[in-house]
Image 1 (cartoon, rainbow, N blue to C red):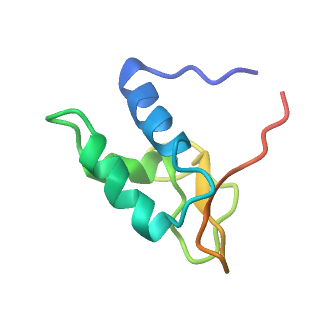
Image 2 (tube, rainbow, N blue to C red):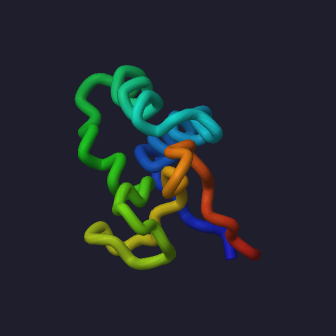
Length: 83
């Protein structure tokens, strides 16, 4: 089932997706730097599971984060989603 994203969601998802494979410790700031004026950098947590042990769960925003930094490499990955 496709996810219904708002226009605001799509801004974050597109910026984050560009960074897949990059070190999240560096990529996070690039995402923040490219957010449109007035966007809240804290909302990155809606889309990226930055916990030490990332996994599928419902976060404080009521959604499953789509992206996560790999536990050992720190590179940004996307959770596999079957449709």
